[in-house]
Image 1 (tube, rainbow, N blue to C red):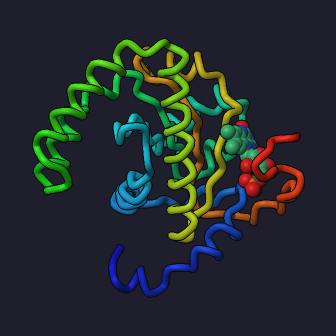
Image 2 (image 1 turned 180 degrees about the horizontal axis):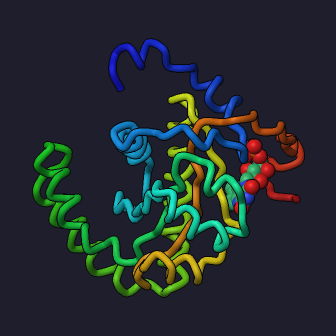
Length: 216
Ligand SMILES: Cc1cc2nc3c(=O)[nH]c(=O)nc-3n(C[C@H](O)[C@H](O)[C@H](O)COP(=O)(O)O)c2cc1C
């Protein structure tokens, strides 16, 4: 983020309280590839299991491809009107990048060589043999975290989003040539709002939280 942008940045509170799911977008507004890249870059700071960062993204910003996605996503109009739809995918074989990640951490001076080697050895031993449901749970968890970070980064830049689970996952992977190694986690429409998202209510802290003993 440039200094000028940083000075104009909304507060954390404005971003969190101001984010709403927006379903009406200005179809003429396009987020530049450069800015979308910056937005994604910010989101990449999200935490992940063993820092394996199993998220992958397909940014769909071509109009014909958005039209192709429309019926797969239950004809939700935001798919075609938003600047882009970001498909958040989880890589079930993210451990294959363990060496890249941990060598980079070592080169950045974040850990001694022995620690780096230990991490790589443990990850490449444990992750490939995880039960399928555990491997999926990991990418869904990490994918949820990056999705939220992405939506907040978009809001901080004056854009709006809506996360979407309302799409046919099998048709999506087929239509967009997504290999079995990658699990679709959610679609996120991002763009310039044409109308504000409507307010939504939340359960109270008292309704969802228990201290020390879980009695719900
Ligand atoms: C995983 C997930 C899937 C969702 N799927 C859809 C969807 O397909 N279409 C839609 O319009 N909204 C979808 N939503 C948005 C929710 O309806 C919305 O987040 C919720 O009502 C709270 O409103 P808010 O986001 O404005 O705070 C989804 C949200 C999540 C987290």
